[in-house]
Structure formats: structure tokens, C-alpha cells
Image (tube, rainbow, N blue to C red; front, top):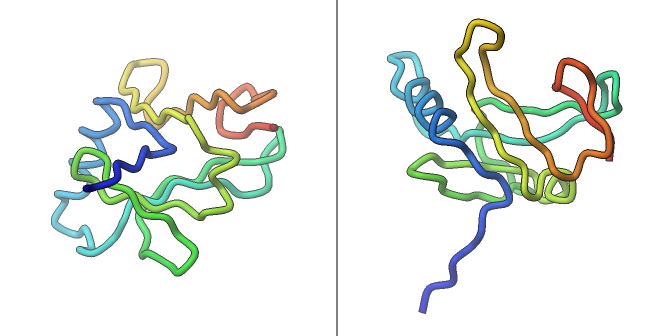
Amino acid sequence: METAINTPVKLTASAIEEVKRLMNEPDFAAGQYLRVGVKGGGCSGMTYVLGFDIKEGDDEAYDIEGIPVIMKTAHGIYLMGIEVDFQSGLNARGFVFNNPNASSTCGCGTSFAV
């Protein structure tokens, strides 16, 4: 019997499409994972990390619609339930984080406090 592991991070359809587009670029290094995380800094205390990286010993790995995703185990408390979206409109272009755990966010939406 297999155990289903719920991913702490959700990717919207537009985010999945954009990540897969990036992964299919000719210069994409095979074997990389999509890293979702946090780091100290920003006007609200913590900023989001999103990029391609290699898996390390303290990473948890997930598969979201065929995308290999990694996250530091310790970041789970900050990222549980977060949704990553990709917007390509005139007013905003790029990845957007919707974090239900944030007690406050900055005006630009790239940093938060818990």
C-alpha cells in the first residue's frame, strides 16, 4: 500500500506551465529540482526563495504535476499551505506567493512575517 504525501506547497496551473517551460529551455541543467523556501530579510522579516537547485541532505522532495520540488524540512512551518502562482498581465509579471500563514506582508508581496 502506497502512502500519499500531501505537498506543503501548491502550484497553480499557470505556475506549473511556466516552470515546465523553464525546464524545457535548452540551457536547463538536468537533475535540478524546483526549490521553494524562505530566507531572512525583506521589509517584513522573511523573503521567499524560488529557483532551480540540487537536492541536499535536509531537503524534502515532492512531485507536483511532474515537477520535482524540494524544500528544507525546517521551512515547512513557514510554507505549509502556500500557493505559488504565475502572472503574466500588464500590471504584474512573475511568480506570486499566496501564504495563509503570513501575519503581514510587504507592499510588493515578496516578504512576509509570521
